[in-house]
Image 1 (cartoon, rainbow, N blue to C red):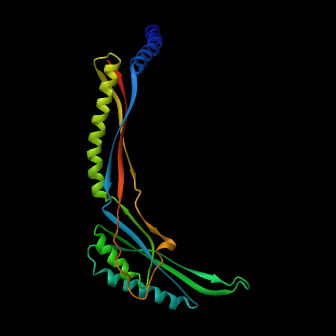
Image 2 (spheres, rainbow, N blue to C red; image 1 turned 90 degrees about the vertical axis):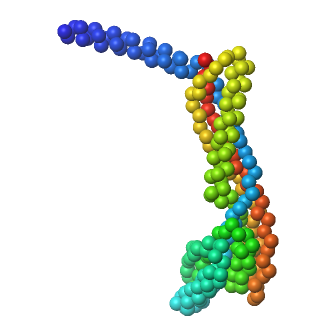
Length: 233
């Protein structure tokens, strides 16, 4: 019994590499890699802005009071614009030292407020009001998550059809009648060449609210790529 078992194991070990090589050969034979894309220019339907205040004072408690008052005022103004989502952003307070004596000179604080809206007119009007006290750090435009997902789902179908067309064309070019799909990956990518305002260009806070600016949101390019392999039958 021991001899039979050993022989059986030896025969199995001898056959396994051959069978494995045969399966590998079948898998990699007549394999072609294909890529197909589907793209669309989509209008940016969402506006995002960051505004900030920066104050200095010798007393940190008084500085904190000034910042809190201005932030509370901004929240009160923002409540008039239900179409605009408003969130408190980053806040920081830090000491400023004299360059010569290295002694504490004053305290400086910075606080941000973030805006997000699909109503460009309302967002622009709110920014204009807030610029009485705030400065604009950035304004940019993008495709909303809902719209992006909708377009991506449509492009996945289009990219898949383009992949099938290429696969069929290549199969016919090699005088084959059919193919099997070995693998397929669908990947998305977005490019947002939107107009924007940043830093110094946007520092135009005034004593009175500035006129609301007409916004040109631009477009973004959404692409879905289909990458995969086929095997000729």
